[in-house]
Each structure stands twice: as C-alpha cells, then as structure tokens.
Image 1 (tube, rainbow, N blue to C red):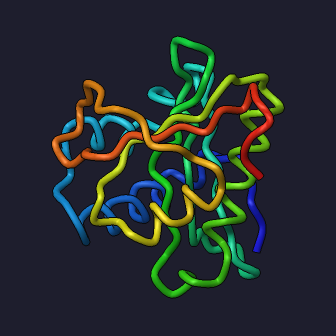
Image 2: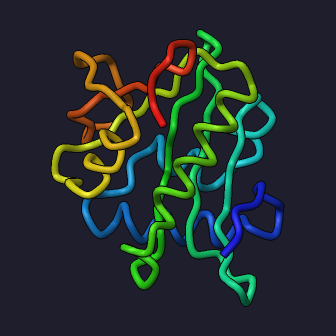
Length: 157
C-alpha cells in the first residue's frame, strides 16, 4: 500500500471510489458531482490536494481531498477506502497523511462536514483529534456533523 498525490490517471478511480461510498449511504448531490467530475479544476488548481491509496498492484483503493479554504485551512473531503480494504488501518494512514500535509502547508486547521450515521468515520476523526463544531452553512443536504482539527495548536496526533 502506498499513499501518493493524485495524478490524471486516477480520475476514474477518484470518481468511482467516491460514487460507491456516497451511493451506499446517501445520494450524489450537485456539490459532489462538481468535485468528482473535475478534481483538478475544483480542488488542485485552487490550492488543494488529493491523495490516492494504491495497493501493491497499483490499483486505487482509497482517496481523500484537502480543499483549500478562505481562512488558509483545508476542508477534508471525499475520504474513502474500498470495502475490501476497510478495517486494515488505511483510513487512519490516509487521514494521517492529510494531517501532515496540512501542517506542512502551514494550515491553521482541517475542517470537515459529515453525517452522524457514519459511525466508523466519526470514531476515526475523534481518535485523531477532531472536535465537534456548531452547525454551519453547507451545500450538502446530508451534513449534520461539523468538525475541525486545529493544526496551529498542540492538538491531534
């Protein structure tokens, strides 16, 4: 397993991995479609990053994005691991890579929006130091949990 930056060859896997997990629990929303269909234009050229997880054969089995925010932080978004690889620690490794990338970029925080029905994801976020925030405006109908990890303070892993 290796975590690498997104390359154009990952576009189909990025879309497929995310459509699978979103479709398993929710419906694809307009904001989802924007970032799934144009990751370079919606994330990378705006100062964000996407990380892909590849297995030993080079197949993409996970991904996560850091979307640049106006305050200098990043929104952690579209994090998923393929069902066959869940429970193997890949989610934690992927989240750790995102945290380190945020710190390396000098970001004050990582922010995320999620749903209370995603218990394993919430447990991971909390274990990695994310704290709940009050509700905020969001383009996602499914969002009912807001969290952040402060990177400009002594917190997190």
